[in-house]
Length: 105
Image 1 (spheres, one colour):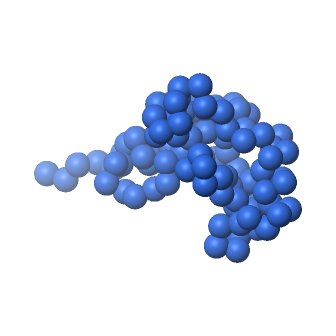
Image 2 (cartoon, one colour):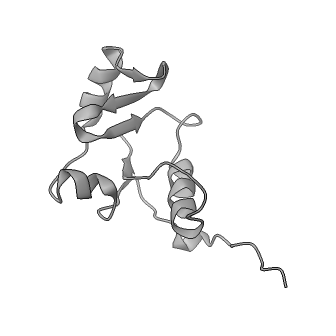
């Protein structure tokens, strides 16, 4: 008997303009009091050309083990973060980047 595909219930997705996943590896590695870089810090890194793979909307904070994707819709959306979060929790065999959180500036 074939199992039915997983269903995404919108009400089960994390919502909000600022969401932090305290159970993520970011906090395991950096401690429970760790904080994400501010929007200004992300902009400074971007202006300095510290991009990942020449992607102008992605910068790395190596000391934190963190890659930050930033920008405006339609290039960066909360829906993308929700999708990655859902996939990692409901289809763990699918390799996706771990979401640590998001915030809107």
